[in-house]
Amino acid sequence: MFGCAPREQGNSQIDYDETKKMVVDILKTDDGKKAIQELMMDETMKQSLVMSQTEVNQAIESTLTSEKGSEFWKKSFEDPKFAEAFAQSMEKEHEKLLKNLMKDPDYQKMMIDLLKNPELEAETKEILKSQEYRKHLQTVISETFESPLFKTKLQDLLIKAAEDMQSKETQSKKEDE
Image 1 (cartoon, rainbow, N blue to C red):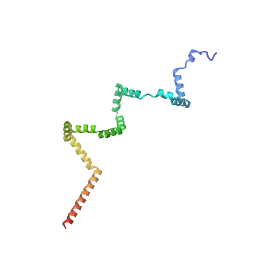
Image 2 (tube, rainbow, N blue to C red):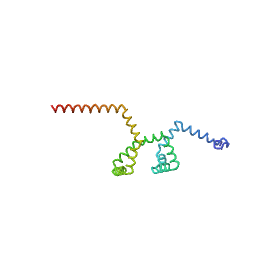
Image 3 (cartoon, helix red, strand yellow):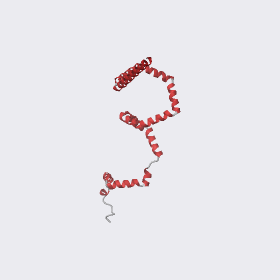
Image 4 (tube, one colour):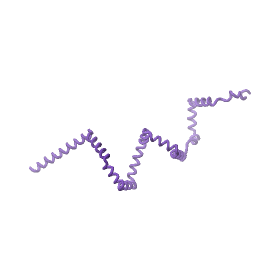
């Protein structure tokens, strides 16, 4: 009789925080982890946890297009490290996309039309004639001439040209004789 009888009101209700701590402690034990693993392996539980592709798409779409989502992305892309990591993660996909587009006849036609555009041509000429571009070009050329690799290549080309000229002179002298 005493086992089924309610205890005093104060002792019978366990505090919420104590219950929470107890449940968390139980889940952290090996037995708790094993019970969760078994639960996750159950097919009916898997079915109830798996979301359909349309639900996932809708969730992503609503998150990306929401005001909070757009604010999140704006703030994220202001961080140079995030922007760099994002760009690097997408680099291969962008390269693949561009290569595929370059093979597409419609895209090729659009690019040719763009390059033939008189406004673009005029702007390009204006940019190429600007003082700022000329200074930049002068800097690039100076840096190129100072490069040890370029100096070596230039030297090799000059030596090869001198050897070619010398061999031509030798051949012409032999022909004259």
